[in-house]
Length: 139
Image (cartoon, rainbow, N blue to C red; front, side, top):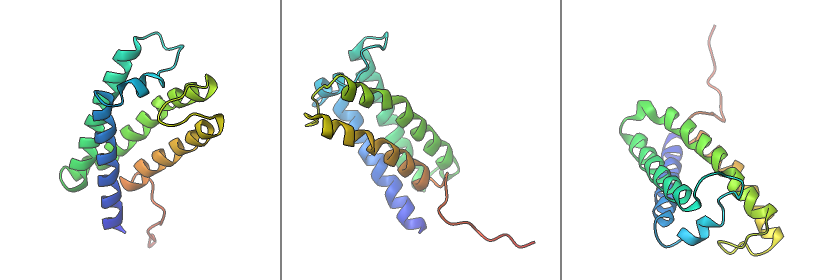
């Protein structure tokens, strides 16, 4: 089970690093569509900053998988909090019917909303913040 969790954390780290990198280049316009309209910050700044944070979190997941393992849980919690903080962007895209990343119908945008909790769970499970099995405690 441990090796599966490590591979899963590595995969999430690669995913975050890749997504963060795309914030800075190829998908920048797409990510602009997800910045909540009510957020009192420059949308381009938000896209760049969140991309840099995603890259840092991805690298942190990768490095704490085999190195600096004592920080794995803290990184997992931080990634989960990040997923919570960016969720309003997905809601904004749905509510305002904004097409981006191929999400060009209300149904597709709605389905996308249900993936955020899965990402959050992936971060918490793969970094051992939550355990699906309990160790028996001998009294």
